[in-house]
Image (tube, rainbow, N blue to C red):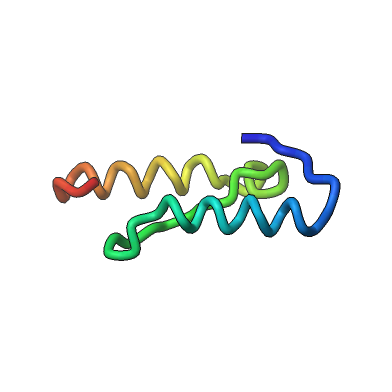
Length: 59
């Protein structure tokens, strides 16, 4: 998701909205997929996480 913010306030509102949608009783793993992280292999890291979760029958 690419979103541009025009102020720090908009960014903070976006962050709060994301946190409100999360279940506080479930673990959440976040991985960066920005340009720099993609260049360093974040897609491969994400794929490895998904593979291991699938092997263990987790969501």
